[in-house]
Length: 186
Image (tube, rainbow, N blue to C red):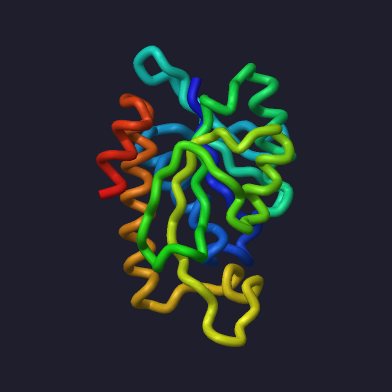
């Protein structure tokens, strides 16, 4: 089993914000992997489909970003998944808009959604795709930045990054993550 989690905030008010790029990737994965999010349990919406010998799950936690672990951990426990089975997609302030980075594991880097996952899973040993949203302008609060929308120029870069991250998720359904990292971290 493999679980791809996109982090974000529920509700149309947050659509298109920097904090919701993880949700955007799950939306694209639904189309490309042909998996509908039809289940509403474990404080999230999710769906699954068999692909070859694997069962692939897509999840959008509906807990708001800072409590994402409250959705991911119960779903993992219910389906008897391990942290090795998950890939988390989320926004990253430390990367320029449109850049993506894949990692095997690591700390939270100040990201509250990742802090929640680490707390609820009891480990930081899970795969990630970080999508760059850039740093706030001088004097702008981080919260205002991540809950804000992209400029038209950045939006184009983000659309490309979402597509690339979606392709990386799709590749992970067929290939070992090390191979996917080598391909997409170029």
